[in-house]
Amino acid sequence: MTVTSFERSAEWIGKRAWKILHNAGMHYFWLAFTFEFGTKIVKSMLLYLPLTMLLVAAIMIRLVSPRIQRKLVA
Image 1 (cartoon, rainbow, N blue to C red):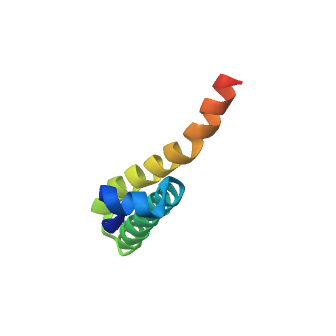
Image 2 (image 1 turned 90 degrees about the vertical axis):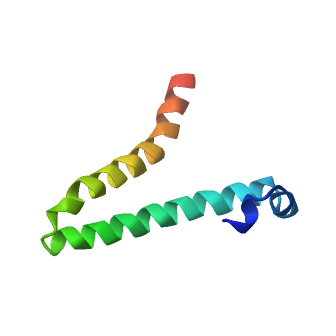
């Protein structure tokens, strides 16, 4: 994602591929952090519970908001 964040390389791979790459990368990082924080909760480190809940809420908002927007437009 870092390499394709520059203008020239983003143009080289194309707008559609850039969008797919960055969307997939963002979701990968979200899932990685959620999994990492979630496993620490299981190990009785409850400090990570609020962080995990924030990550889950962000993922849910990201996944649900396009569907809500489509319903509002239609």
